[in-house]
Amino acid sequence: MYDIVLTGGRVVDPGQGLDAVTDVAFKDGLVAAVGDGLGSGDAKETRDVSGHLVTPGLVDIHAHVYWGATYLSVEAERVARMSGTTTFVDAGTAGAGTFHGFRKLIIEQSDLRIIAFLNISHPGIYGYGPGFMVGETSELRLLNTGACVKVAREHQDLICGVKVRLGNNVSELVGIGALDCAIEAAEELDLPVMVHIGAPPPRRKDILERLRPGDILTHCCRMFPNAAIDSNRNIRREVEESRERGIIYDVGHGRGSFDFDVARAMVDNGFVPDVMSSDVHVNSIDGPAFDVLVTMSKFLSLGASLSDVIAAGTSTAAAAVGRPDLGTLKPGSPGDAVVLRHEEGAFEYLDSLGQTYTGEQKLEPEAMIVNGGWWE
Image (cartoon, rainbow, N blue to C red):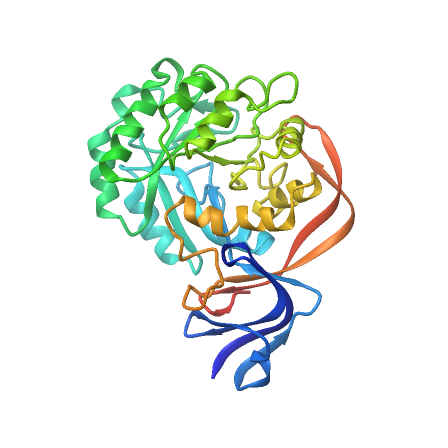
C-alpha cells in the first residue's frame, strides 16, 4: 500500500527525460513508483493534481539559512513555504569555526534537508550587516585551509564543497589568493569550489583560468564589470571555453547580482545557466530575488524552455553538489516533490539594478512532499 499517490499531474523530471501526464506514488519516505493507474490501487491517500505540474523537490544550491546566528540568514521554512524548496544548500554562511553550531542548532532541527558549502574563511560570513560589509576573505589570517579540511571531513555527510567570495569589497587586497586557498582545501577533500564573483579585482578571466571541472561560478548573471557578456551582447570567449571545460554556471540571484540584460543575452545566445539558485538572504527575500522559484520563473519568461528551467532547479542543481539522489522522482530516491501551478498572464519582475520586466509566465507552489509526507 502506498502512503500518498498524486494522480493526473504533468510530471516533469528532466533527470529521467520524463514529461508526461502520469501518477507518482510515495511509500516509507521514498518515491515508490511513477506510472499510469497508480491511484486505482490501495493507497492511504490519493490526491488528484490534474492541471498542475509535478516536479522533483527543488534544490536551491545558493541560500543563506544559518538563521539567528548571522544577520545575513533567513529561516529555511519561510522560504520553503514561498517556493516549494525541499533542499537548501547553504552557500558558505558558516566556516570551520562556526559550522558545529549550524549543524546542531539549524540543520538537525529542520524538517527540510539542508546541506552546505563550508566557507574557506574560518568564521564564515560574519561581517554582513545593516549598512556595512566586512569581507571575510579580506583577512589572510582567517583563510585556514587546514581547519577547513578538518571540519569538512568531520561533517562529510553535510559538506558538499568549499565556498569563497571574491571581489573588491570582499577579498580586497587578498584578491585571487583567497581562491587559491579554497582550491587547495577543495583538492584535498575532492570537492568542488563555489566562487562568488563580484566587481574586480580579481578579474573574471583570472578566476576562470584557475577553476577546475565541476567548480561552480555563482552570480553568473551579474552586471558589468565582470559580466559574462561583452558590449555586443555576446558571451565572452573565456566564459564559453570555461563551460566547455566543465565549469558550472549558477545564477545566485541575490540582491546585487542579477542583470536582466545579461540574463536575456545569455538565453538569446543559447547559454542558459546550468543552475538557477536564489541567493536568498535577509536583503533579497523581499525582492528582488525572493526565492528559487521566482528566479526560475524569470528565465521561463525570458524564453528558456520549461525542461531547462526545471532541470536547473532539480537534477542539474543536485548533480552540481554531488547529490544525484536528489532532484529526481526516480523510484527509490528520497520522497521529495513539488506540485506547481504554471500560470500565464502579465507578471512584473525586478532585477538588481531596479529594472523591471513584464513576463508572461510564472511558477507558483501549490503543495510539497518532503520525505514522503505532506509538508505544510
